[in-house]
Image (cartoon, rainbow over all chains, first blue to last red; front, side, top):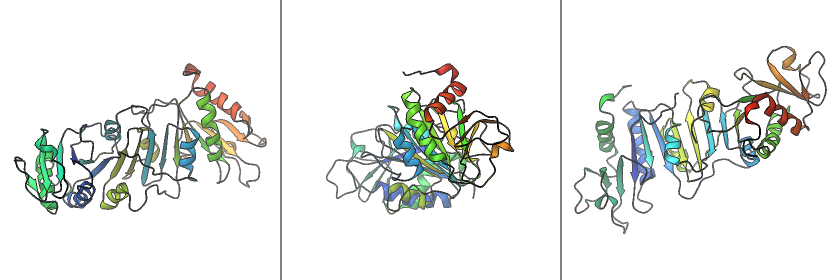
Amino acid sequence: MESAKGQIPTVAFVAAGSNAGKTTLIEKLIPVLRRKGYRVGVVKHSSKGFQLDRPGKDTYRFAQAGAEAVGIASGEEMALMARLSGEPPLPALLARMPEVDLILIEGFRYEASVRIEVYRSGIAVEPICRKEQGFLALVSDMGVEGVTLPRFHPDDVEGLAGFLVEELLPQKSSPHA
Amino acid sequence: MESAKGQIPTVAFVAAGSNAGKTTLIEKLIPVLRRKGYRVGVVKHSSKGFQLDRPGKDTYRFAQAGAEAVGIASGEEMALMARLSGEPPLPALLARMPEVDLILIEGFRYEASVRIEVYRSGIAVEPICRKEQGFLALVSDMGVEGVTLPRFHPDDVEGLAGFLVEELLPQKSSPHA
């Protein structure tokens, strides 16, 4: 497991407003991509902050005592929690990713370079891709006027996964298949 | 926050048997080292495995769906959980540490290069430093026959912190003080 250093393709799923279905979409994409032979990493933006660790755990005690970063590992997995001290969060996470074939990003609308918009018809906000350039595709249960991007229905996870492989992993088709 | 890549001094607190007081000692060392102006990272070995994440959390859902690694970040902190896929855990963690002045390691007796033994008199096991070379010091509430290492009482956290700074951070005395 070597640090990835940014050469791994990334795609961010972004949405105007919340509850557009980003998390569920990414959750469904992972097993489909895995079945195609790709190792997937996921990076999520947390606007409200998050708490993984719990009082009483040794790692929690170290963080409370003032450690900048606390890591834990068994033979099978590792976890690292660290203060960012003003560093931009997305590069900090991407630089620490293990070697995967593709990194799916939830959020980071302004920081991500390759983006797909997730848009739900019931949400009363304007889709971002009507105002901003640089979107790869639109995931929506309906067409959006004035948008000519490739569109995938949220249920068409197979179609979207195939599209991602073609667009982002052209040299790596089914490396483990 | 740049990845550390191993040039940061490390010291591992190891013990024969459990409940020798490693966690408590590290927990007490952190604020003392911070007060001296050093940023501290901590890395812990988990022999039983660990679970930080909880069912229902988005990060948990991504891991359950088959992601190799899941990261989350707010503006202030980040967390990364990853499968190790056979990679050695200690280097995997150290390579991902942010820039700190010193990394305290709990456990990793056989993997760590700079070690301090924590030994408690009530524990009916032989101290490791009587059999193995390469220890920097002994932390114990009593002297151990045949061991001539510098010895610190577990309550002498100030003394131990000063020793660590002298031994491991000679060029960096009180960089932020």
